[in-house]
Amino acid sequence: MGGISLFILGGTILSIAGKASPADSAALLQQAGIEPAGPVSVTRWRNVGSQNLLMADLIALAAEIGRQAASGTKGFIVIQGTDTMEETGFLLSLLVPADIPLVLTGAMRTADAPGADGPGNLNDSLCAVRALSGLALGPVICMNGELHAVRHVRKVDAGRIGAFASPGIGPLGTVVTGRVRLLQRPLPQPGPYPLPDPANLPRVALVTVGLDSDPLLIAAFASPDWQGLVVEGVGSGHVPQALAAPLIQFAKQSPVILVSRCGGGDTDADGTYQGEGTAAHLIANGLIDGGPLQGRKARLLLTILLARTTVPSAIRAALVPWAGLGLLTD
Ligand code: ASP
Image 1: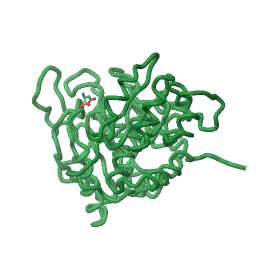
Image 2: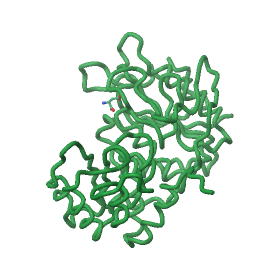
Image 3: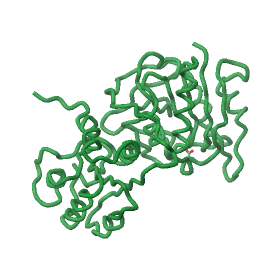
Image 4: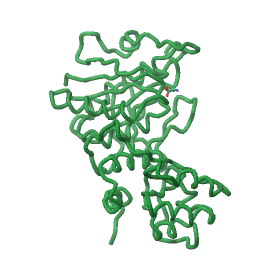
């Protein structure tokens, strides 16, 4: 299979410790076994730490991937910083058809570090993007010899090479000495959605609730400046009693999605736990059940949905299949 397109966005994989200027991308490509005139076309798309990537960058990238795929490019690799990779990957999964092979990768060690992991990760990604053809898995993250589904993966360690994990799910597959092995398949997810206008993206806040969180936390977002809110409740989505009323009030004017702050597992929409501030109470009083969605992913999803419509019933309806993903009923 020929025709692979590689986009460079920046990050540690192209960084030198203690220096602001990037490492030589030609050296990285060579170490990863990518020949200058070979079947991989390289685009230096951005050169930023991933904390500085914008949703607009990813929307533009999704548009470019769509264009290139329509002209016959068979697979895509995105190199970027790892800090926001789980979010950029998920955002791309909302905007790019799942049958386009797309692998995101980066590095935990700088290009000059002993045992730099960038070239190996990039070579693994090249093997993976070829192997994923025809599987329609959606974008995957390839790091440390593992493939992860963007809906489940999280960066769980700030420094270790094995920085990524998919809590409660595990990796989708492995890449070892060029052999790509699929261990499981992610459930197909709703979408893709039409590309939104990057100049008119709604503001959606993400709030993580903790022990004795102050209601002021919610008050900060109960303003027309914010078009939506995602609340990561404790455990299966509960909040301290004092937060229940302000959240329910805010949900009357803007969509509020409730998820768990755990990163894996589900909300208690069925009501095992009852009382003010429990997940069941909040959902019964206007908050939208986010089911197994992780908060940072729910924020991106709500942004994309709100860019299409602000009609509350339409937002609610669009989130039902996300909350119910994989749920079996008798
Ligand atoms: N701070 C870096 C970034 O996300 C870390 C990395 O690339 O791994 O851009």
